[in-house]
Image (cartoon, rainbow, N blue to C red; front, side, top):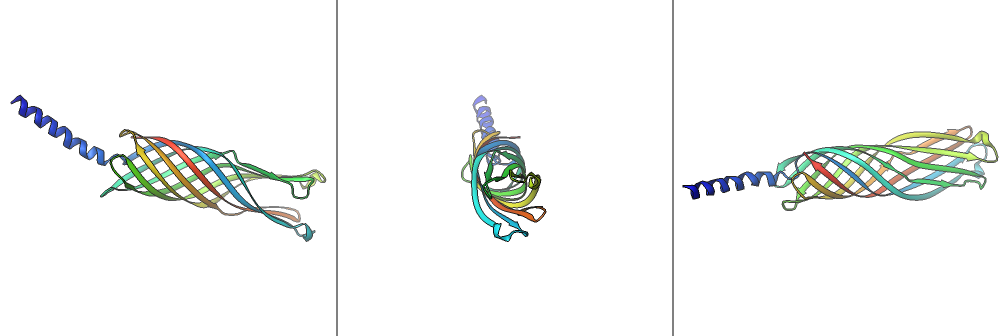
Length: 217
């Protein structure tokens, strides 16, 4: 009788563990991430009073990015997962360049929000590949300092929306703890700043390579 009881208990334990393994990548989650951030921008400067001074150039800058995310994933069957998520990140990217030699225009990336979703596919009991897409809202600061004529100086913070795509993988260490790697591409609407007869237009996109660790409830 004891042997039969033990076998029954072991069988029940195995059967109850099987659904839990299938649910490794489902439920609410919170994570922290960080990595490499590369911003490429196209800057154009126009002066309607002196068109000969108009310029257009492309530059890029690199730095660190870090942030946190929350989300919820739901199993759709046959190893497929769908989810929603939101995150906020910050970067230390900054780029300054002279326009006429005695002045300086600077662009600095600040906070960034994202709201989006993802679709994943389990590749075994503890690995999932996924692709994601979302709407982003990024904030940046643009400053212009003219040493020859300080009346032209200005500084403005502005935020713009854009679209983001991502691809990544998660590795579950336990039912609750996982690590991730992810690549993101983001394209933002242009920034436009005007002061008198002068105007600055900046369009940019971002490439991010991230690693993170999370906890699933």
